[in-house]
Length: 88
Image 1 (tube, rainbow, N blue to C red):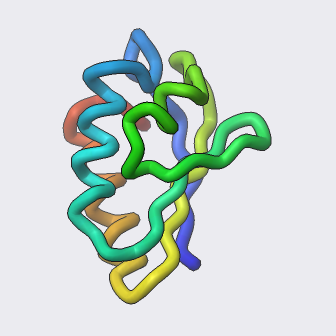
Image 2 (cartoon, rainbow, N blue to C red):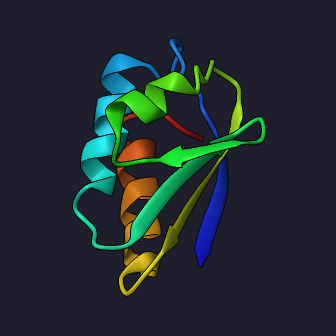
């Protein structure tokens, strides 16, 4: 398993548009990709799952991947979310 802990800096948190960006990035990989916030963990490939966490701005989240392409998945997801200024 590969994981990274990051801070959400998008002004609206990880809702609607930023959540869609995250889900689209995660869905490109075979690995199981999850996001954890305040003790809850959901499948990052599920828009409803990600939005159900209600992640506000300035929150720390942990993104984890398990599978054949776990390292590439974490790197790509982190890169996309940083480029869109969703995480710091």
